[in-house]
Length: 338
Image 1: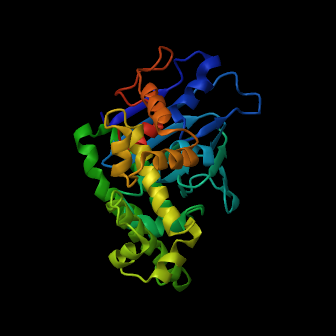
Image 2: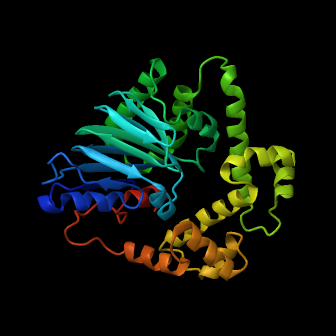
């Protein structure tokens, strides 16, 4: 099914907050409100899968959501999230804190730590996976963490509201066709208008970084994936490549991180029954012990233990969880596409 609905309204009041946390774990942690309102937590999330994009309508009381390094290690989904809410949103990012006015869209990247706090509101969120929307990488990375004010911001907010009104009336088989119209509309609203010379160099680097990332992902299993072969494939000098990836920890670290993220995604999939050694080799690790050490160092758990935990997590929902319209039972599963 392309539509998932999760609501805590049928859950006993003293279990509602835990139920909500279970839906968002491990993508986000939900902090306990400190304003005396924790007796109940009536909230609802309706999620629709739109050909790679994920559209979410969320209604909650006062909430403080956190995506820290622990969450990123446990579930390294690398999506952009475009959000518009009915109340002010207080964001805390690596670069500082800001307040986003009500009805103003903003972009965050789930590959980076982020905290979000707001009073009771209704909000719309469009999740775009980096792999499927790579052409938008330069403009979305540039826009992240900044309120989208002005005419194009209002246009994007209106577009998200239009999706919210229109999607319930569309049959599930039509939803995957919306991927390309969404890509075009987001690009039109987020791309800077006119010549903005001061952004040109940074956007060029972001474009090159995305080219490098895609080249690495195409060759994850290759034993000949080196800095030199990568330079030849993307058409840049060794010095350019090292400068580009300096902020990512260097070329070798960046390649290994992408390989580990790929292996994490495969081990999260309860339907992939390949041996761990085969998965490791498919992701570029030819020595099982080296893979196990690197995986544990990155995610804090051995690959075998992580796979067991992922399979336990794929078990049927416990009785107190409301039934949903498909087997998917968490936001992370929706974002990963199963």
